[in-house]
Image (tube, rainbow, N blue to C red; front, side, top):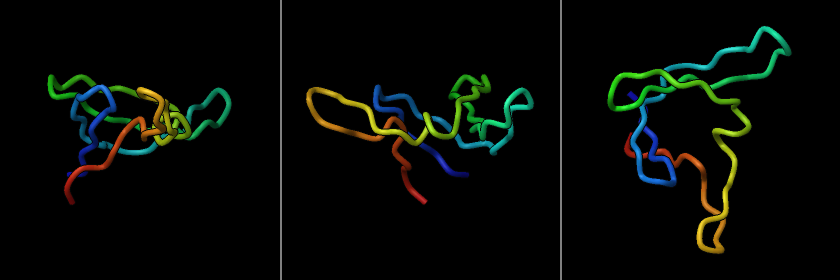
Length: 64
């Protein structure tokens, strides 16, 4: 199981990648601790965001 920490602190489990049918956008499917599934464009999932003036990953891989 691959897990990621969101920059706001939540821990999520990577589920799989998918393709959005409407425009073929690569998507990431991930699961929250409460079991809900979330979907986000791959580009957004792996982008850098600014936090307190520093660039950090939106989702940081944790453990192996």
